Structure formats: structure tokens, C-alpha cells
Length: 364
Image (tube, rainbow, N blue to C red):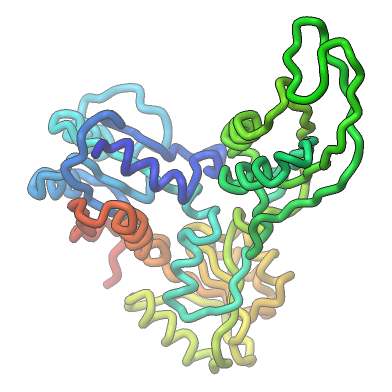
């Protein structure tokens, strides 16, 4: 198999289109056409991780954080980024980053954290808008089910926990083909009135090419009539952060102990105790201070994330328990997601969870 085969599975799970504008996810070195010998899975790609790949005869490193985040203007080995890239290129090792796109999909980073904490009834804390579109098309009754199933198979019709969602309305379509046409129904030059079904369904906009290809291939008409509408609805499967609830209420200090044990950290930062049991929990892997207001609005008794500045702890205003676990600590389970995706499709492929602790923050 090729490196491209491996990466396609990751991108089916977390589409690159879902990464934030500032991000640099994707293939950073190497080629999708290379045959894949093995993969190292890690939070960060460093020189030590590249050496680990060399020792394990792996020519692919899959990392959460992009080693190239801003533009590189030179490659002379003057910092760890340049040295890592030089070493990867020298040894024909591909580096791939799956960052904010993995943060933003429902089953991604935040779902994994929630799973580790034992949360249930999960939902996105801040679903994205502008990610959905509606397709309306008109199909002869004889091919209605064929076209509908083709659209569903291509990824249309998903709404939250439901799939194969559509609306169908019978009506009459009219058309007249020119002398050079070859209509599926009727004759060239004659007005046709045909029983048709108006078919409506929604789809993620980044799947538009696949959806339209499926429509045109399954539809019997020479000229297929369809309309595309942008939607501003919340997309329940793509967004930032996660909200869930504990199976049972926990006293605050017990909850903090639970967090320390789950994240395997010697110390965590938090705001003053609020004197309330913890049931509703919001979280965001990595730097999640931008979601504090959403956590408050959602009624969370605790919000877990990382990278809060001194004055941002005041923003909790005693209304919830703000817990800063550390950036690396909050995303440490990400390689497990990569492992599960790849192993499900390629059960015999050599994949290794990196043994290198790439956390640059230490505690004394």
C-alpha cells in the first residue's frame, strides 16, 4: 500500500477542509505515492521521533501538531524545526499532520478526552455553521430510489445521529428537447409532462464533488436539473469543544483527582472551588480559552482545557471550575485515534505509538 492509502483513511475521518484557516495540516514532507513501510504515531514530530522512525524502519510519521506551522524561509539547521525537516528529507520519511481538522470532527480529539473521563450524552460545545448545503433535484419515479440511494452512499443525508434523511414530493415536470437531444423520456421537439419526484437532502459542502458525481451517474436524464443552497444551520458533527455529563455527580476535589489520574499529571491549575458538585463538564483539547463563554452558557460546572493566562482565570467568575491540565496532557490520547483509524482498515500494517515524550513542559 502507499502512504496515500493510509492518509486517505485519516482524511475520510477528519477532512482537511475542516482545519482552521491558520493551521497547516496535511502532508509536510514526502510523497503520497511512496510505498508505506510503517508509521510512527505521535503528538509532535521532533528530531527524536524521526530517529525513532529510522530505527523502526518506518517512512511515515503521523503527528497531531504540524512541525511546520509558519513559513520556512531557509533550511540550514539553525533550529529544531529545520533540523527535523532536514533529517526527514534525508531519510525519505514523510511527515503528516492532522491537527485542527481532528479537533473539529465529532469523534476526534475532544471525543477521545470525554471517553477517557467517562462522560456520556456528548455534544459539540460550539458547532460550526456554514458547513452544510442542500441539494434539490427532480427525478422520474422509475429512478427515484436509485438516485436517492446513490446520494446516501456518497455521503448525503446525515443529520446528527440520523442518516438517509431526505424530503420527497411528487409533482409534474415539463421539458422539450431540441432536435439534437436524446431524451430519456419523450421525443425531441415535443413538450413532455412527466411525473417526477422533487428530492431534497443535505450534505457537508466539502463533499460536493462526490455528491454531484453520484447524482449525475445515477440520474437517467441527459440534462439533470438540480439546485444547490448554502445553509447556516449548525453542523452537529463538526465544531469546537465537547459537552457531556458524568455518570454520577462528583464532589469537586474528587473530580480534580479524577482528572489528575486520567491525564496522568502531577499537578493541574484550577480556579477556586465553587462549592457545587460536578455533573455537567465542558472540555477542549489544547488551547481552549476561546470557548469559556460557551462553556458558561451551556451550564457546565467544570471546564477542562489548557493554556489559560493569569487574567483569563478571572473570567470564570466563580460560576464554574476552570481546570488547566496542560496543552500536551490534554492531547496525549490523539495518537490512539490515529491507531484506531489505521488498524481498522489495514490490520497488518506496521504502526507504532511513539515512545518519545515530546512534551516540552516539565514539572519540578
